[in-house]
Length: 198
Image 1 (tube, one colour):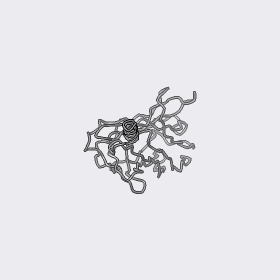
Image 2 (spheres, rainbow, N blue to C red; image 1 turned 90 degrees about the horizontal axis):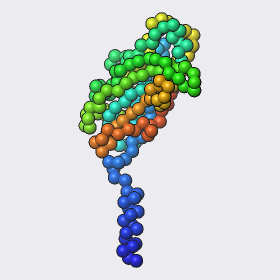
Image 3 (cartoon, rainbow, N blue to C red; image 1 turned 135 degrees about the vertical axis):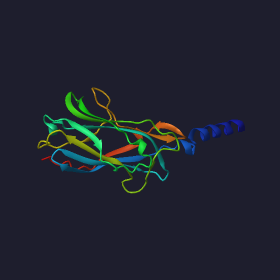
């Protein structure tokens, strides 16, 4: 009976004990500070903040955003970062594979902004995400139309779907030195004003 008692205690201990290096980081990503900087240029900031007291070492990021194609009329959208707008400590992590295209959501055509990832730098070389305020500014995204925008709202939305031509936002971090998906541990907010672009 005594051995059975200790065996049960050991099983419970092992079952509920979570080592520090398996701690799951929680964070918030925020879209904010949008503005029409020219008749054909719309910009907004992307921030990431750690919600834990422990630091988050970023491994990789890529973004998928939905937008309202009516804003571009017959124009073509190009995507870029505003130069020197990123606060990442390792700027080589800033994704640079851009594309604006069309996908389908709920059987309707939607615009999709694709910002593809770069090769993760390896544990110890990733940017550390701040725990203060809005956190670390990933960068200020610039959407430029080949003609002036029409009188419509951009309606930027986070996207996590990967069907029918859509491209998901995904984030990885180094946990126990391993590049680990943490997308589902994040909260994704939009504080965009979303003005009529005219």
